[in-house]
Image 1 (cartoon, protein in one colour):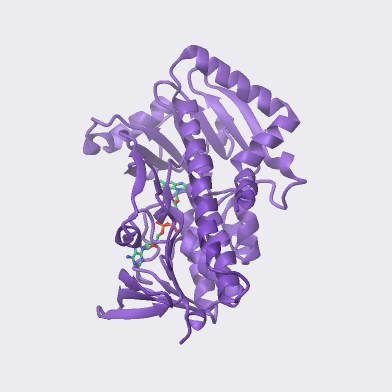
Image 2: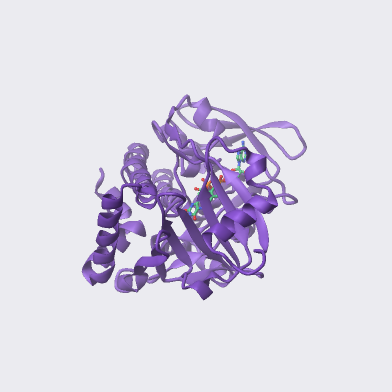
Amino acid sequence: MAAASKPVVVVGAGPVGLALALALAQSEIPVTLVETRSDENFLDQVPRAGSNHPSTLEFFDKIGLYDRMRPRGIVAPRFQYWDRQDGNVIAEFDHTYLKNDTKFPFVLQCERIKIVEEALDMAKQHPLISVRMATTFTGFRQSGDDVQVHVTNSDGEAETISGSYLASAEGARSLARKDMNVEFEGFTYPERTLNIEVAYDFTKHGFTERNYISDPVEYSNLFHWKGPPDRWRVHFPTDPNEDEEELTRSDALQARLKNFLPIDGDYEICGWNLYAVHQRVAKTFRVGRVILLGDAAHVNSPIGGMGLNSGVHDAFNLADKLARILQGAADESELDRYDRQRRQIAVKHTQAQTMRNKRLLEERDPAIRKRNHEELRRTADDPALARKFLLRTSLFDSLREAEQIQ
Ligand SMILES: Cc1cc2nc3c(=O)[nH]c(=O)nc-3n(C[C@H](O)[C@H](O)[C@H](O)COP(=O)(O)OP(=O)(O)OC[C@H]3O[C@@H](n4cnc5c(N)ncnc54)[C@H](O)[C@@H]3O)c2cc1C
């Protein structure tokens, strides 16, 4: 079989791999999608947030996924910055300022697990996508013409799938990245983030659906998710020396929440998790016919909700290039352009912005805090500045910048 008629092998049915598979299939490119989880345990995944920015909603809309996500999510046009020291709102931003820029002038709060459930269902129904569940990618060999993808299939047997290209959307621990000998440059923050999920209506206290809370002692983020029952996620940084068992004991979780916002009685805690936060970008996103995208290519702090979003942007950028190459409308140098475009965005936008977000929330110097808060207020109060700010935070600027990179 000629490389052009072989499927693109996509490893990982996370939001990024699924977006790539659906976008390629929409361009008539056959795909084999390999996922290590089985149908039985696919939905048993650690909860991860999913603040879907307007630019990402436009992409999801192109593949018909937005209409499935919308009823399962919460439309959140506004977000707020709070000062935990005095308990006041510093500034509120409203995506309505983007109403002439996008069909979606809001963020859709729809968690990763709901997105992958809907997208996997769509992939299974698509005649050009062969979904291989319970199949684990183990390695690859490539030649000038194709790539041999080694897997352990659902019967536990070693199997080789022949593909035109291999796209690794395996997440942060990408085996393909390691096999390619590509360095994952960056660092890991010493403190872990504690995420507590509670069924409690925070709007009673003036919070909106997405809140960033600045505090030199314990900054946090507070986000609303659709139930039933509706849940809110509160994130706190933790002391690197604190023992995991101690800090996640039920009374310790209650104490942390009540210290954040005292209420009568106990909070109804639905779950918690503790995770390390990394800032890393792969040294290159492409080696021959093997390409990295999503968390396999870059990981960052979740403050600002940019990991999933920028990964989905990788997927659509890559789908367009692979489709044109396989249809004979472009040559392989397009893949180097994918690397130049998306790697620069990962470093200059996603990483830089998430690091700025964290610094803003945890700032200790009172004079700098005051200056930062005044700047936020001034930006939010001026419609032109607010629109400019929102074009950056909702990743439209990064898409425009990527287009300029040849
Ligand atoms: C607590 C938390 C909160 C977050 N909140 C947000 C947010 O609000 N907004 C945002 O944009 N981002 C957020 N992120 C980041 C976001 O979850 C990730 O950026 C996103 O899930 C990356 O998608 P992905 O498809 O690249 O990888 P993943 O979602 O990690 O998916 C990888 C897939 O590959 C499969 N796989 C792995 N290895 C193999 C193998 N060898 N063979 C076959 N299959 C394999 C896995 O089973 C999985 O299905 C958050 C992350 C965390 C940890």
